[in-house]
Length: 357
View 1 (cartoon, one colour):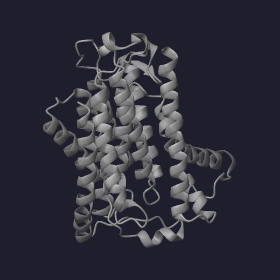
View 2 (cartoon, rainbow, N blue to C red; view 1 turned 120 degrees about the vertical axis):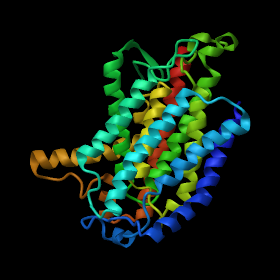
View 3 (cartoon, rainbow, N blue to C red; view 1 turned 135 degrees about the vertical axis):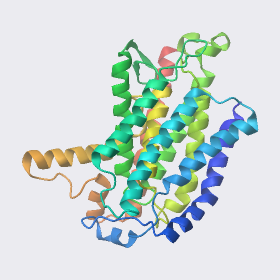
View 4 (tube, one colour; view 1 turned 90 degrees about the vertical axis):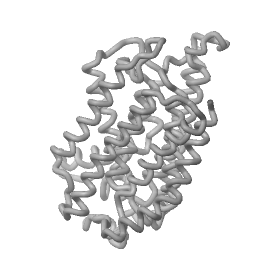
């Protein structure tokens, strides 16, 4: 059963390694290039015209890798896996429409704010509502109405508040990845690490699942997650696809993921956290996204309240660029920070399981 994880990761990696350059040629031929802010670091002006909407590559690669892994191994599809993939694709579609209007229609702001928010809300609500349906024989649905950290807390917030909470997570992570995607390879590399963490978490939850309670040495420390192994397959497919895309997205980037990619990745991260019952843990595992989002919140809040800026420029990565750090230096150091966040997050996850043991 475990070999489907390996197949999903390898196929995703292979597809984006060979598929992304084909997409680059297609986008370049169409003239679909990136718009660059005039008030940003001067070094970024040379990136104007670089093909964008590259998220198409790893979205398609992830979906194909998942289904191919199932076909090769003969394992069944699960609703948890399909819902996370659906959330990723739905958010990616909203991002694609935004990118398309920006680049093809030459409207610099892309989708109007209300239209973009409406698209995200429709996709998010559909995911949240469907994730509370389709209970398995143990009564577990893909998501739970209980808030979770390393597992569910003991109290339920009810279906209505759950939908609101799920929407908040989806929008927060999508915007977090979107804000992080300002330097070559930064968001892609950080996402690879978090998807790697969720591959591990899914495998661990499967091995310690309450469905296998009779074979566990301590059934009291088991996980009530509907489809943990399949969530690991999805995470592995995403990790492999993003790794392959990173080959072309790292400095100097031949292609950018655009809102197509950043909204899709944020949706996938939120979906994995919700379905694996590790919602609050995502703030640790995706610590870099949280840090960069908070830098924007602090900058805007400070300017509105005091008229002064805390950073030279927000998001945070551009502050360090304006301080003289090279783009590659910022990216590598931020990757190190993200790596530490993943290590701490996995340590907390294991400690939570060990404490119950």
